[in-house]
Length: 221
Image (tube, rainbow, N blue to C red; front, top):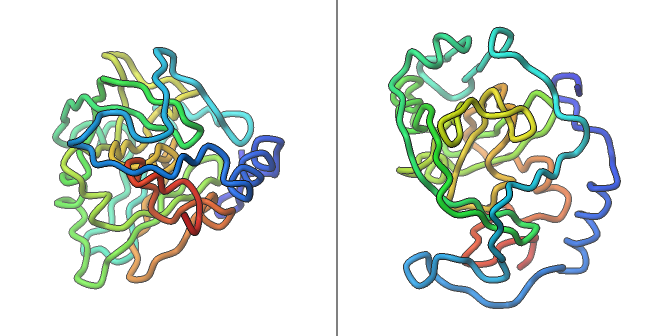
């Protein structure tokens, strides 16, 4: 596991995905809107749930897991798993769209909606962005409006069972309207900021927002 604020080590996957960004791999040049078609441009359906990680998945038990929410908020939060699941729980069904071109329909999630988290921490007026920090050292950035999507949540369960470690358990973010690298696995903390702060893939050639229907895979798309 990477030390806090230390990015994951370089890997074959990291080098390959940086090369894809440089080459514009998988780009079709097409765009659409979610209402026009369910499958974004350049995507293909799978029934499996592929895993692509930067290294060995960190193993964090529910007993050891903690979530810190801090920065430009009125009420910082420091929850263990019991406190986290004591909050209002929601169930959503949504699709996954990975930047490596696979999509999976109708995933059943359970967890804390991001809107309920926002009600609990109360972002200050200057908060416009946030950074998600993971237990493996990974980071990714989001605009507050994307984090607050009506179907976004911090998920602890998938298809009625606890979220497995390989898929980001005990808790991961799920933001269905963006490419899935924005939905950080092994969530450790959420930092609210006035200014944007690009994360791990965003500084390695990937788009700062990542809208699948606009095919925002890479920087400069």
